[in-house]
Image 1: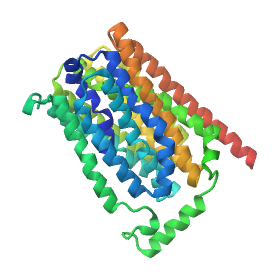
Image 2: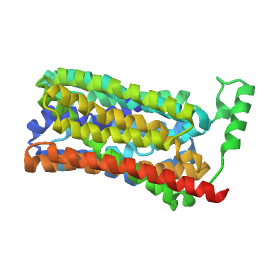
Image 3: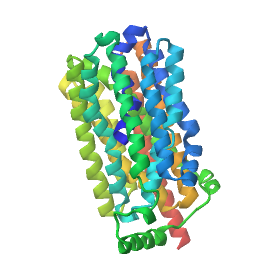
Image 4: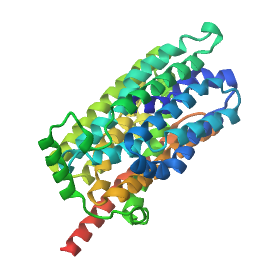
Length: 402
C-alpha cells in the first residue's frame, strides 16, 4: 500500500517533465501546487488517525485508499494552476492518516525490540515506489498522444487505479487486531498480547500527547528534514534529467537506482538500531548525511559525482525513518500514541509544503539550485542537532526520575 501511496504523492515530479510545458506552469506555480498536498494532509492528519482508533484499521485504511486513488487519477483533468492547487490539496486530505495510522497499527503488533525493523520494512515502500515508479513513470510519459491523451495524463490515470483496487484487498484481508489474526495460533497471540501489554506505559490520552513538548520537538525535527527530502522528491526528476542529460526513461532508471540504495540504508539502520537498542544517534547521523548530500551536489565538479552526492539525501532521511518513528511509542500509549504519531507526522509534512515551493521560488529568481540546496543542507544539520538535544533532555529526565 505504501508503495502506491508514495508513488501517487510524488509522481507529480515526473509528470512535470511534460505537464509544466503543456499547461504553461512556472517553477513557482509547480512548486506551490506540489506543496498544497501537504496542507490538506497536515490539517486532516490527527482527526483521521483518531477515527482509525474508533472504527478500526481495516475499514478506515480501505476508505483512505479508494478516495485517494480516485483523486490521484483525477489529476489527469488539470488544466489551470487553480485546478492543480485544489486537486493536490484534496489528495492530501484523502490520504491523511494512512502513514501515521499504519505506524500506530504496527505498534499494536510489534514489541519494542523489533519495532524499528518493522517500521523500516514498511517504509521501504518509499524507495520501492522510486524503484518501480521511476522507470514506470518515465515509460508512461512515452504514451504521449496515445488515444488523444498526453503522457502525463496517462501517468496520473494508470498510477491512480492500483490504490482503488487495493482498497478492496485491505477490506477483505487486513486484521484490525491481534485477537483477530487467524494466521497466529492461540499461544502466539497470547504471548504477543502479554508482551505488548507489559510495554504499554506512559501517556494514554490524546490531550496529553498533543501538549507534550517532546512530541512537538520530534515533529520539528522531521519538519526540518522533510523540507529537504520533499524538495528532493518533487524536483529530482527535473534535476536528474538536467544533470545527466538522459531522456525520460533514463531519468527514471537513475531515480530507481537511487531508491534502491535508499532501501538498503533503511533496512540496515533499522536493524542496527534494534540490535543496539538505541534510537537518537541512529537518527542524528542519518540526517547529517543529508547535509553532506546537499552540499556535495552543488560543490562537486562532475555530473557523476554530483548525482552520487544527491543520492545521499534520500539515503540519509530514509535511514532515519525506522529509529525515529520507534521513539514515540516508547513514551506514548493508546489514544496518546495515535494522536502523538499523527501530530509528529503532521508537523513533519509541513516540510512538504515548504521544500518544493522554496526550490521553485529560488530557481525562478536565480535560475539554479545552489542557493536552495545550501539552505536545505543547513536545515538537515539543524534537525540532526535537535535530535541530539532531545536525546540529552530525555536522559536528564530519566536520571531525575531515578
